[in-house]
Amino acid sequence: MSLIFALFIGLAIGSFLNVLIVRIPKSENIAFPPSHCPKCGNALKWWHNIPLVSWLLLQGKCAYCKSPISRIYPTVELITGLIFALLAMKLGLGAEWFVTSLIFSLLLALSIIDFKYYAVPDSLNFTALGLALLAPLFMLGWDLALGEPKSFSFYQDMLLLKFKDAAIMALSFFVLGFAVKKIIKKDALGEADIIIAATMGALLGFPLVLIAIYVSAIMAIVPALFARNHMVPFVPFLALGTWIVYIFSDQFIKWWGMIYA
Ligand SMILES: [Zn+2]
Image (cartoon, rainbow, N blue to C red; front, side):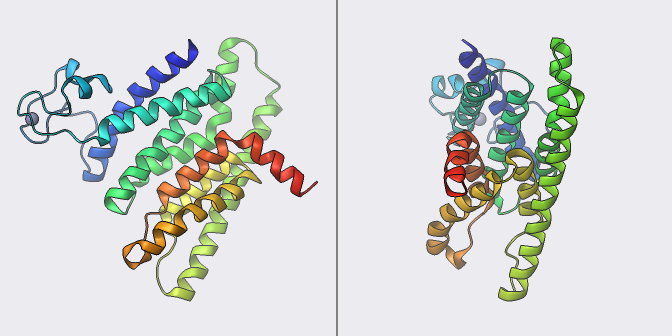
């Protein structure tokens, strides 16, 4: 039951994510004007705007002018729905589930924007980092609302650890980017990558974040070999690596423990 609930919340958030993906790179207001067809400009009715369902019923075409609607929209909605549902299985419903789901939703939006524009908006990037850093405060608020908070030092320790891990990752990526730039005389790691590395540090902590960077880099190598100029957008790989390591964190911690026992 809670899985279905989580899936529907995710589909709705995914629908909003589509608005962000289309409008933020063009510096448009995210609330006005209301959703409209980019071709004919007709405003969408609410029944044209139901996640997944509307796209299927309209068979991927605008209700007015019949111009095709990109498959990206229902895909983003479906993936966001799955993010919320799978994290509900792992974490159970609550503040940690909701905040973590939002962070991964933002990483999904950043990935798609990076694929399209080879650049990501700071606004979404910093929002993800802020959520990752302040997650313990949301958890405290939730636990207080339920009337069953843990000791305050629990949230405080978690908060400090997240800031520390984020700072270490940001600094490491900054130094790495600086060194690589000196060697190959090209920008390899941008400001956006540094912010995402900080988010990954806050979200995963050590040693998981190192495994996630490693997994991301391995996945990026093959497409980079075949890409023009060997340039691939790195954000989608960082996001995917973070997702894989987060979902299978217990397994990765077990392997890590076996190696360093
Ligand atoms: Zn239209």
